[in-house]
Image (spheres, helix red, strand yellow):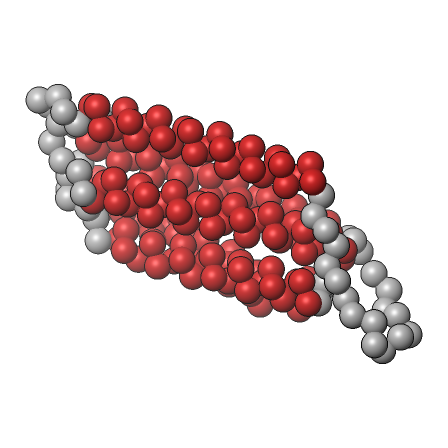
Length: 192
């Protein structure tokens, strides 16, 4: 994007690509159905006699805070990109989003290590298996979001700064969706 000699000209972020937006909504719908079906299977399976609930590891509270902070950083970077379409303007916020997202994944792995140290292995109990399945599947979707963010930043750095805001807008939408899914899973695990 080139700067206009007209000082009164305002920057308006480009409208996001309709096909990309539809693709993200479609991805969200598919992932929603995937987690919904696993949640239904979880609820059905827990009614059988061999189900032994496990205690929620305390690390999940830290990982939840990390994911919330990551979403806030993504939201703020998207807002900043709407005002100034430059990766340099959003760099600190994007770095925070990546840091907190990796922190989320790291604390998830820490929770897994904590459970394994208490002899809650994957095959030890159906409740254990579902815990590892649900949290691991969510973690993979979070890492997929980081890949999408890296691609968006790469395109913006390659002198296509007009693609930054639409890409960050789509990534932010996905991040908020992942936070919603995580809170749902946390409630499912905590209250059952």
